[in-house]
Image (cartoon, rainbow, N blue to C red; front, top):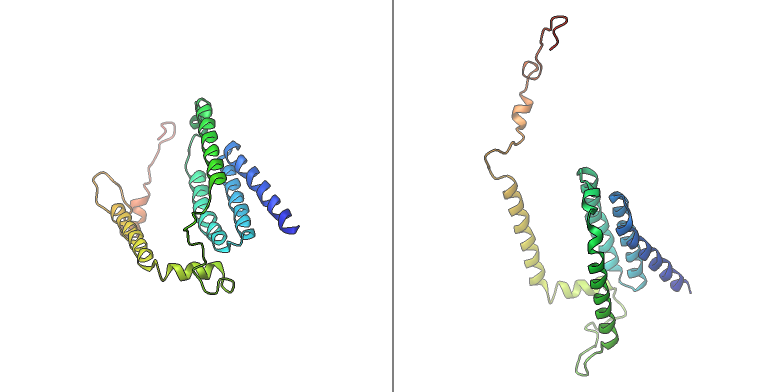
Length: 201
């Protein structure tokens, strides 16, 4: 009974917060409702017994992606009123695509079934004695350790490429010169101008 109440509570708040993400006029409020939706989705994953996915959802999406969205929205001077102009003309197309996707999901879940020759046995000997995180770690660091290391290498190369592109020398780009800033004197920073009365600057 408690699990059913928690499920309906998390699901209702998740649906309402998702609706508020796309209907809120203030973009900062939209990001905050998105964070609330992530937290409720994490609660649903915990009810399903997938605590690792819930933890990843909170740490990665709430702690990094949503906070990044919030900082970008708050720091950039974006005219969202101009962005919303003409958006209503795409509503019928969006509703049509949403109905098509919903119909595909319903057809997929109603017609889904395991093949007779499919091996649905648990790959672990002690399936009931280990957690989902431990089971995922056993698969990730045994069968897929090379793929895991290669994905880390790809991310490392992407990070190095971003740093190199940021620090490349381009004409017409002003960069910060810390040594020149530290060596700046009062004579370089301030100029005293004598103004005679009635003439202005």
